[in-house]
Image 1 (spheres, rainbow, N blue to C red):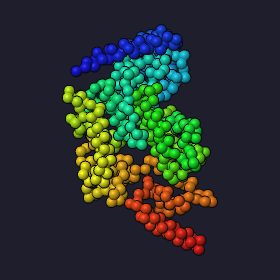
Image 2: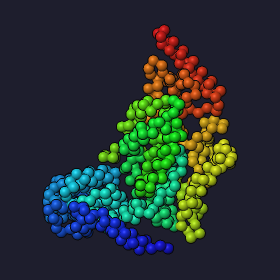
Image 3: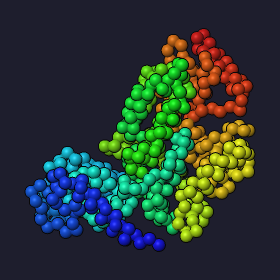
Image 4: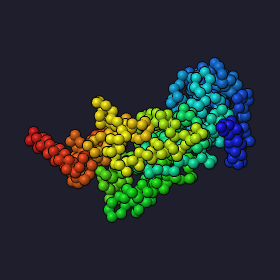
Length: 497
C-alpha cells in the first residue's frame, strides 16, 4: 500500500520548488512560506492573525499573545488592531466563520503591503478541526501576502492540490451533467490522486470539496457573464434560418468541458455551471422560440443575470445546487456498491464506478426503452407514492416520477412533493419569461391555473412548479381546449360584471 506520508513529502518537495520559481519577483519571497507554530516577534509590515470571540475578551491562547505582544485591543473581537488581526471563531458556526475568513482574505487582498501570519484559528478552544477550518483558506494560496500554518498547508496540499498532473474524468454529455454526475466526477478525481480502499475515507475527503463548492456557488456571476459573451461571439453559428440551434450551443460548451487550462476541480465546477445555464436557456427557448440573439440576451438579462452567486458574502443563491438528496443517494450508493466498484487489490476503480453507477443504466434505456427498464429494474415507493420509482439496486440509476402510462421523468430529488417536478429549480428563471409572454398586444401565453400557449400549440404547457407532460398530442390538445374554454368563459363573466 502506498505510504501517504512519503507521498506527501515528495509532493511538498515539488510544490516548494514550484513556489520558489513563482516567488522570485514577489515582495515577500524572502520571508517564511508558512506560519510558524510559535511567533514571538514581527517585522513592522507583518500581522499576527488569531482566533477570537466577538466580545474581544482575549484571555488565552493566541488571543492572549496577540494582546500582550502584537497590539490587539481588549473589546475588539474582529479586524485589525495594532499588528494583529482578529477572526471570530469562539462560539461561531462554521458557515458564519467562513464569512469572517472571506472578510479577512478581502482585507489581505487590499492591504498587499502587509504580510499576514495565520495561526491555527478555531482549532483550540473554539472546538473546530483542521479539516473543517483549512478548506476555508483554500483561496489564501493565491495571495502572496498570506502565510498559513503547516498543518493547514498539509491538509490543503493532500486534498486540494489538483493543479499538477491530476486530470478530471473525460466529460460526459453536458445534457446529462447533473448533481450526482458532478459528485461522481469529484470522487473519481480524488480517487485518481488518493487511491481509496474504503468508502468512508472517500466520502470524508469529498465533504470539504462540497463545502467549498457551496461557498463558491454553482453558477457565479462570472459564469453567467462568460456565457453571455460566448453567445454574442457565436451568434452566427448558434442562430440560422430564424432559429436558435440548441445543438450548436451544447456542442460549443462540450468543447469547453475538457479545457486543460483549468485545474481538475475547477473544470468540474465549470462543467456543472455551464450545464445548468444551458439547461435553463434550452427551456427558455422551448417557451419563447428565439429567432435572434438580441431577444435571447434580453431574456438572459431579465431572468438570469443578477441571480448569480455573490462570492463576497456567500449567501445561498437560487442558482446553487443544494446537494441534499443527490449527495444522500450518491453516498448510500457508493457504500452499497463498494464491492462491485473496486479492483482486485481492493482499491476504488474509476472505470467500474462509471459503468455500474451510470453506463449500465443508460445502455439498458437505449436497448430496452425506459418503460421496460423501470418495470424490470425499479420498485415503486409504495402506496403513498406509487408514481415514484427507485432502482432496486441502490446507486445504479436515478429516481424517476411517472406522469403517464409510458412517461417517466428524472426527479430533481427524492421525487415526492414539489420535487416531483424536474423543472422545479428552473421555474425561478422561466417564470419571468412566461410572464413576459403573457403580456403585450399579441401574447403567446395566458395564465389560468397553468401557463397555456395560445398561438403555437407545440409550445409546452407549464404548471407553476414545472412542465406538464402529456401521453400524446391528442391528450395535450384536449387539455388545451378545456382550459382555454374555461379561460374565455371567465373573461366573458368578468366583462359582464
